[in-house]
Amino acid sequence: MKITMKELKAKSLREMSNNDLIKKLQELQSSLLNERAMSTMGGSPHNPGKIKSLRRQIARIKTVLREKGVKV
Image (cartoon, rainbow, N blue to C red):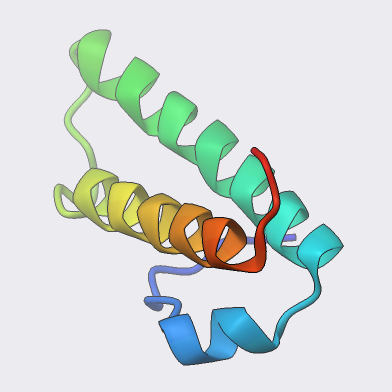
């Protein structure tokens, strides 16, 4: 499953099931890890705003999960 740069909105996240949110969170976290690894190895990122976007999307998902009462 490819992660796009399209921002996930809180409204659409609230409509997703808990399992889908957790899967999406794991995908985004692994993608963030890869982006950070590429930037620390000296490689110039092809999209410099991607790390910021990934961090915000992760925060949105964690917020929605917390609203639903799911521990992450």
